[in-house]
Image 1 (cartoon, rainbow, N blue to C red):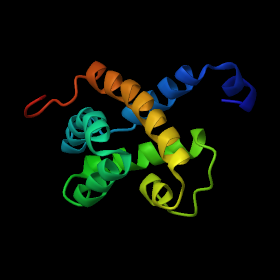
Image 2 (cartoon, rainbow, N blue to C red):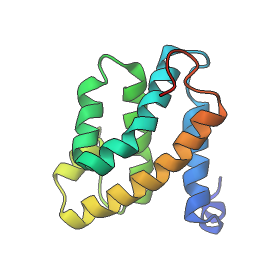
Image 3 (cartoon, rainbow, N blue to C red):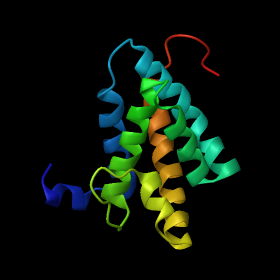
Image 4 (tube, rainbow, N blue to C red):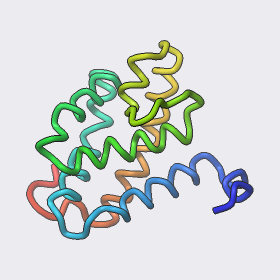
Length: 136
């Protein structure tokens, strides 16, 4: 996509495009995709109840046990890099950047991640994820 095309898309279209590509990148019929979908579905509630920082800290703490969480963190960070106007030092996640920024950034990041997760969850559902286990 050229830079000009991106400028003609609404922010919601940009979110949808990024989320679709994220879901499409998941391995088909895998535990990773199932974990990703399950945890993505729970994340908005975690963000609303505990805050974005705590929700991302949970993801970070559990990602070693659930491959899907590492991918979810990667996709959220990638979208934040594109959308939020703040520097991301090399190999730093959204959580790292939240910890080192002000409350205005945290508010903007929270709003953006909640909006992005709407699309991410729509697309995981459209793909029939999670396929294994409870769909909560």
